[in-house]
Image 1 (cartoon, one colour):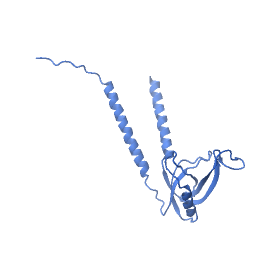
Image 2 (spheres, rainbow, N blue to C red):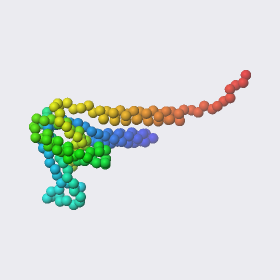
Image 3 (cartoon, helix red, strand yellow):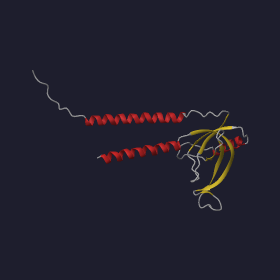
Image 4 (tube, rainbow, N blue to C red):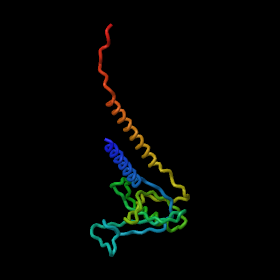
Length: 186
């Protein structure tokens, strides 16, 4: 019976880790950067089309925005692609407008830009985070993550409510049944 409990604990921890990683990937984050350049690449399902990787299916144009962190000088490349009606549900249809704003910000080396993005950067997989919005700012201060705070607060309330309901249901089930005995006469 002990191995069943351990298996349940391990499965629960793996589920929590998986959900946490998915939330970290898909929930929006912010960063203040200098935009250093922009470019457009033709891609297919295999990645960027080149002499080594010819097009072998439907292709699309993907915008890229090159940035630099103003304090650490660390360089990051972001993808700028519409999410459309698909998952994740950012309903982003303005990647060309975002690219135009980024190009304008890249002309002024002192201009800071606040980007909102989701995703991770994996160089070995040529995977880039996707920018959902960009705007000019004058400060290095990043905004408070209001959406993420509300999302996790509601999620926590739901989880606590479900846990209390399950605990109450299990408590009733494990309680000994008291037989109805007639009251003594007398």
